[in-house]
Length: 217
Image 1 (tube, one colour):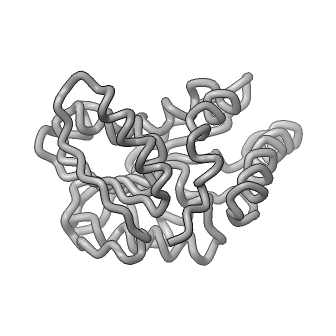
Image 2 (spheres, rainbow, N blue to C red):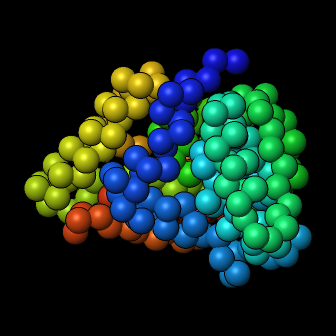
Image 3 (tube, one colour):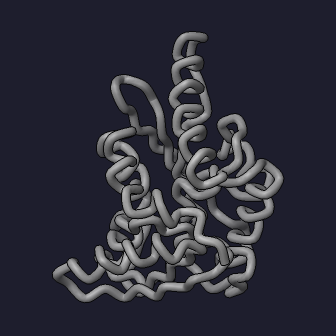
């Protein structure tokens, strides 16, 4: 399995902080709170990166499984886990997410800044696959760049901000180049009921959002 994040992976967390301050990290953890996560819940996180969201879920007592194709990202994640002072229940799976088939096993499935790596057709295929891993009535969370809204200047700035990021990751990791996805609409199209949305700004611009949908019984 080719590790496309071999070179940029070690700096991923630092680059996120430079590009979005704490907004990206806050977005990733937005739905991982005591209201939505109970002790003993099984949570799946796809594309864990450096894994602050996974660690947050485990701190709340969840039984966390992370899946990532990048060995580099998993190694950086393990370094963060090793530095954590508490005992965390986290299982790591080095795999293509489409080959991970633990269907209807999870109380929450999370895809933070992961689906934007893919073309639109592949994004929908992967989100559908992740939904299969969720139990009936489970929550499915997507955190990512916010779909442009507001006046023409605001929308233009949001698009420019997005294309700056996507161009960097196209150049260094061969990620797909595409428009910003309207995740709430995609989630509804695939059968999820939108329960909550939270926005996160950077430099006065609404750049990120976290959307939580519920799978039907």
